[in-house]
Length: 98
Picture (spheres, rainbow, N blue to C red):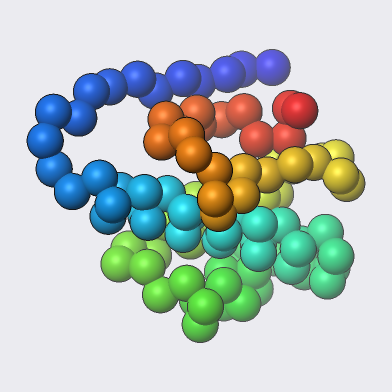
């Protein structure tokens, strides 16, 4: 298993907008997971189309990334980070390992 950890320091900026962006991304991953594993959508394009009305993010790439991450989750009862997660440190690439 390959694990990526992205580290960095934000010296100034709007942390609330960063937090909101991360929450939207996690929510989109959860929604895409449910469309794939519970509703049986198999084509990535169909999942992206299902996510678009709810997650009108600035870049379509965010939705596509969420779909790719959701497709990588194999366990049925995996715990995804919630909307109220206090941690602002993104740990990319380790979804579905817990």
